[in-house]
Amino acid sequence: MTNNETIFEANRLVEIIKLQYPNFVGKTASESDIERLERKLNVKLPKWYIELYTTVPLIGAEFGIQEDEPIEDYDGVSHMMWGSVDDLIEENIEYEPGTSALKDGYVI
Image 1: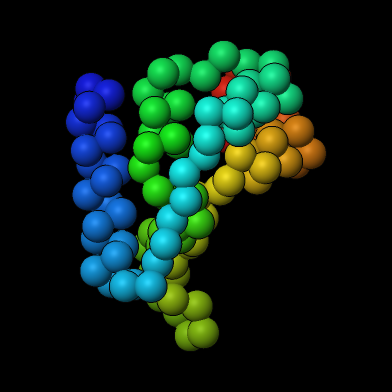
Image 2 (image 1 turned 180 degrees about the vertical axis):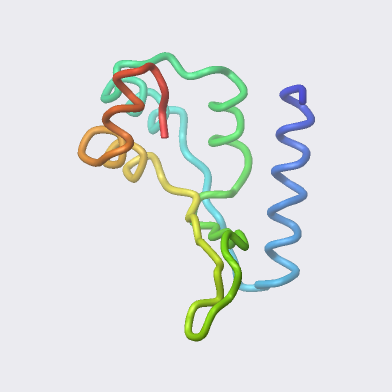
């Protein structure tokens, strides 16, 4: 997928979220947020990642993935929230698997 396709599909995802949750207001990161993220994690992020975080209002979106078969009080859905820059810094500096991933050159 090219950078343009990634951005297009991410914007489509935001529109789908808004159809399901009309009050959803996602946020984007600023250029200074991205610079702070790169500085704190000591990484250089790819251009597509920077463009995604600074142009598509995904921050604050929550996604559910049917990971397991539903049983009794558990619907089998695992949830993920698209985090802010502060969330990314915290996850990668303070918690596993973020700290190990960062040591291997990845950002969670």
